[in-house]
Image (cartoon, rainbow, N blue to C red; front, side, top):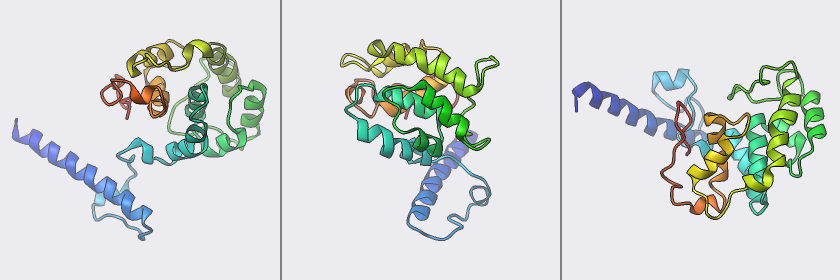
Amino acid sequence: MRLENLCHIDDLLHWTAEREAIRLRRAAGAPPPWTDDPIMRAWRFCNIRRSDDRVTRWISYNWRDPHADDPDVWFAMAVARLVNWPDTMAALGYPVPWDPERFVAVIASRPAGQAFGPAYNIGNGGQRLPKAEHLASNVLGPLWARRNSLRPRADDTVHTYYGRLRAMKGFASFMAGQVIADVKYLMPLRSARDFATFAVPGPAASVA
């Protein structure tokens, strides 16, 4: 291995350890700054584990885990990741069974710029419809209509489930991966043989 590659690995290991240390110090109530690293003090970085992110924690505590036995909790995870904003999800309430009229009304009632989370770039499919109407009619509606075939099955691997979800409109590789990264922690995908090895291809799209 070349020396410069070893240096990059050392930088990565430092960043990984220090980013997690920052999270732990902050969670313990320590006052800022939580690091002496000048770059990490000046800029914001994602957590090492996706499950520690604020939005993921909200989804887990309020929708996923309390409804772990719901066969359509996967659909709620799809709604969650398309919205990706806790205040909006709290106003919506758990979205199973699917109520498209309520979805559109709640989104419309939110303050301007505060309906959808900023982390994901969710468009309106190139249509003139408002985003909420596009999602309700063209993305989530067809997903709900095919729920019997889209529920995770006992014989699924994470890969095969990704393939079924990936075939649906609005769920390209990245977004399908985000939904799977939530659903895989519930049965039956939690026991899939590729639980710890499958990763969605593409930048920032690995399942963890």
